[in-house]
Length: 486
Image (cartoon, rainbow, N blue to C red; front, side, top):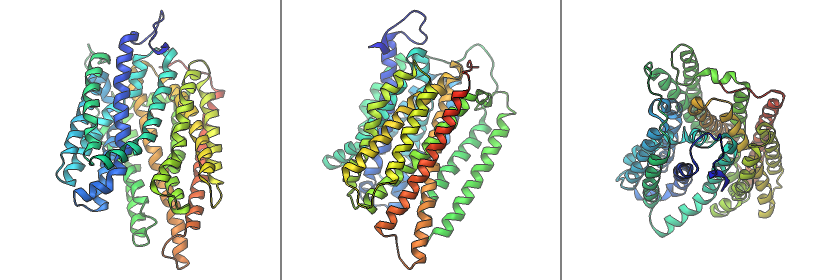
C-alpha cells in the first residue's frame, strides 16, 4: 500500500512504524467518535437505570463535550512540552480508564464525573491527532491519510447509533463504555511503540501559559453553555429566562476571548502563537472550516426534527434516513485526499463546499410530504460535498505551518470544528424559538407538523447561507500564492 511505501527524501517515519502509528491514532479516533454517537442513544436507559431525571441524564453527554472543548487549546499547546507520544498515550490511557469508571458508576453524579475525565483524555488525543499524521507521514501522503481519517469519522458516525442500539438491545448500557477497554489497551501499546517523541529538549522554556489556558477554557465553556441554553428558547415557560442566561454566557465568552487574545500578545511563549495567522492561507482555511461547520451543525441537529416532527418518521427510520450523508463522505473523502496531494487543496475544498451548499438547498426545498428516497439522495449530495471539502481543507491548514507548529494548527482545527457546531446549534435554537413564539401568539400550545417543517426549512436555508459564505472565503485563497510555512 502506497501509504506505507518509502521513497528517498521522505519525511516522517519509516513505512512499518508508520503503519503502527496510524493504527493507534485511528483506533483512538474510532473510540472517541463511537462514544460521542452511542451515548445519545443510551441516555433514556441510563436515566432509568440510575433513577435520575432526563435533564440530569443530558449532562452525561454535555459533560464530555464541555471538558473536551474547554481544554483543546491547552492540550494543543502542551504537546510541544510533553511530546506527541507522551501526551497522546496518556490521554488515551485516561480515556480508557475513565470508560471503565463510567461502566462501574453507581450514580449519575459519578457517571458525569467520569465523563469529564473521558473528555479530558479525549481532548489530549483529538487536539493533536492531525498533527501526529503530519509528523508521521511525508507531505506527499498527507492528503490521503487525512482523507482516510475523514472516512473513519464518517463511518463511525453512521455505525455508532446502530452499534449502540444493538448493544443496548442485547446487553446493558454499561457495555457502551466497556467496549472501549480492549480497543484502548491495544491503542496504548501501539501509540507508545510507534508515535515519535517530539519533546523539544536542550533549552530553558518560560512557564506554561496558565492564564491563557484558563481564559480559553472559560471562553469555550461559555460558548457551549450559551449554545445549550438556546435550545430552551422554544419553551414558552423558560424562553425569557433562557434568553437572559444565553446572553450572560455570550458576554462571558466575549470578555474571556478578548482577555485571551490580549494575553497571547504579551507572554513570551503563548498558548496559541497568533503569528500562525499571519499566513493568509492558513487563516482563510480556518475561517472556511468555521463557517462550514456552522452549516453542518445546523443541519445535523435540524434534520432529526424534520424527519420525526414534520414527516412523522420513527427514531430508527430517522437514523436510517441520515445514513446517506456519512455514506457520501465515505465514498468521496479518500479520493479527495489523494487529489489534494497533487492538486490545489483550496480549489478542491471550494468545489466540495459548492456541492455541499447545493445539497443543503436541495434539503431546504423538500416538499411537505417527502418520500424516503427523495430525502436520501439529497442527503447523499451533502455528504459527498462535505467529504470532498474536508480532507483538502485540513491539508491546507496543516500544510501552511511548520512541523513544529503542527500541534497548534491541529488545535485550531479542532476549535473551529467545535465552535462552528455549537454556533450552528445555537442558531437553530433561535430559529425554533422565533417560530414557536409565533405559534403561541396565535393561541397554539406547540407548532404543528407543517410549522415544524417550515421552521426547519428556514434553518436549512441559514445553513446553506453559512456554507455559501464558506465557499466564498475558500475561493478567495485561489488568488493568493502559497506561502512557505514559518
